Image (cartoon, rainbow, N blue to C red; front, side, top):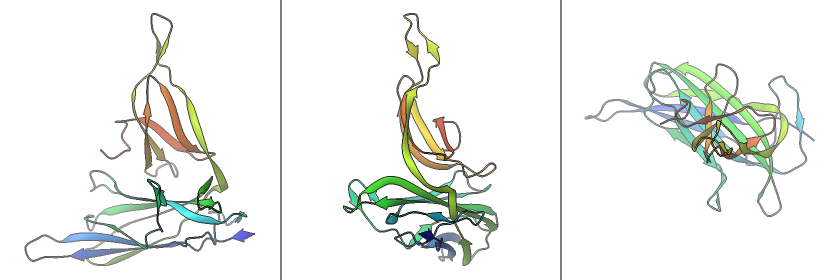
Length: 226
């Protein structure tokens, strides 16, 4: 069966003013995201087929710009701490600067659901972005995400040891610390933070998706908001 992407994202930037406060520019992203997949298509126009029943399982919105000291992000997961919920209709990101360039990135992941409601571990990614400068007051931005990576992908685990030295006893040694995992949509676009993982003496076990360009960096490398 062929699916077409009908997902649309509408961002409304609202400006609020109080008599004793400075003007604050509030960004309200209204996402028209169906709970089930009805359409996905590649940027080149090709269609993708999938026989499962899919639902949106992850949403990340990342806002960056030269006037922001760090990215402003919104993250939603369908199930967290064994509690599942429906996707939000409105995402509000507040206190963005007016009249300065901003890049709004959207990343969505759809997953096939089993009869018991649990995810099957296969994902279809959709990505879109929009850049522009916004004046104080209401502004509307439309982002049309499209299929990323050519169709259904499987979740994978990437495990091993990153060896930086061999000690006097002949044992392999590696770094210990937090690893930041990010999604790189394309060259020149900011990396979108995905999750954090831990590395102990170089041993790691990371989340990944086949054929998707994730970035794995030790904490402090730069792309993750501090």
